[in-house]
Length: 331
Image (cartoon, rainbow, N blue to C red):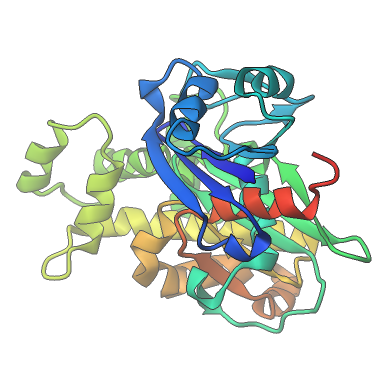
């Protein structure tokens, strides 16, 4: 039996699998609020206590860098080591992956229902693949064919310098540099970035904030869901929220295009994370596409690269399990 986990700062998804055929339908599955537990071991023990089955190996996708078998979850005080988890959980083999690496591991195993295609492009068989995921932060990873299978490689490219592509974004960068010592793509292209774009638009007088939204914003600590909600209202979307999302998808499109051109991802670009499925109409618009292909002499090459949105919210769990079965002799 294989235990797979998607370990996040807010919630943790765990599942048990007896074969690779169960990747999209695990034998047992549960979701836990991460902050309710002092350690990952405590949480996993709670899960395993519900099922009287022996576990031979475990693979955990972790929201943070994994170095030398050690990891710390972003937004949680958990510090994890593979050897300590083996001992605490009595599981013979434990392996940790960065959560974006786990998401990327799922790409070869994805089903049609897992995806929404923004641009079919002209995919090249076994061509490199990029994964970019705006959730709370901005995660990135990529896959390369090694002659026998796709190998997944981690990246912290979301923390690279934000590069404006138009006058509005130049103003946004200046605004951000007055408040932060370094401005990365994550600061403007993720869940933590949306409030920055919104604040810049509001303070610059681009559009007025509606009274109903002002009242609701004062009652929450995380305004990102409200920005998305305001932009996605069918009858009367808030203009300021809609403009914020349009700017956001342009920035996301530019960075996705940067990944595509740097890695020559002729196999496609996959957009994961919690935000994209909620703003599909904006991703289908011209802002994203224009920013994605706007690479000068290489615009034609970018136009041929397939772009997909990952709809499955548990795809990192699928990837962790896929890794466990694919490399079971090594973990």
